[in-house]
Length: 302
Ligand SMILES: [Zn+2]
Image (cartoon, protein in one colour):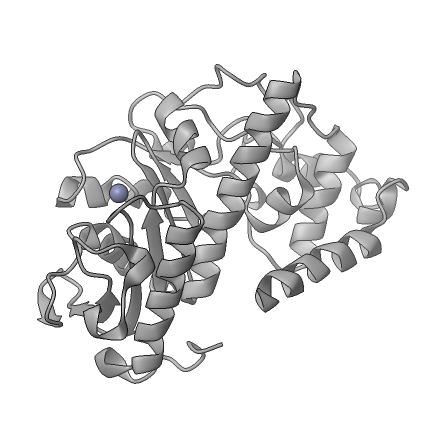
């Protein structure tokens, strides 16, 4: 992994510029950004961020095209003009010091949910529960300015992936590949949801299966807002509801998730043995860990 040390070599880090170009190619080749859409950034200092320039196809960038900005968005290096949507990236980096890279694009399947303003249903696919969790939907604002950048701020605690209403997605992480994978995982999930809906129905996991996945997530050391938010049910009731100033988006296309009591309430009310991951025999936790680990390793090798 190229982003292991704290700030790498700053704004002249050739390897990180190449990585931005490589992720740009993946974003473009996957159809996540048409023409000159999308933008990518990596934090390389206390007040320095490398980013893709405006008006360039993300599939054809070279390291010399990459710009650098300070945390306020002022350009400090690069012969091309920095992306107009950099303020979105910087708002995330300022509020989440653990975030070192951001990818914003318009992946069609996830953006379909953004346009329909349809919440992404939970408690359906094991990997999504473990690696992603709830994906909040930030309200719409005209792209580019501070008002747009700030739409994501109320949702930053507890997720690394956010849908932008009537616009696209933004995902972020400790390094650029991790940030990009979130977008790829989300769009693949949205595609599966749309395909299964076309087949006629989308089945939710049952209560025991849903609890087991959250137990597994905890065991693997991943955080989830459902571990902390009171009165949030297992797969329906948004753990991000405090962030929604206007009405919280409600399911219209998909059946609402069944009601299962929340993870916190369950921990309080259930004696330890019943809540233990091994309580239900049909899901083999070891097998699931192995399966998920193999998929992550396969994704890493791509
Ligand atoms: Zn955009």
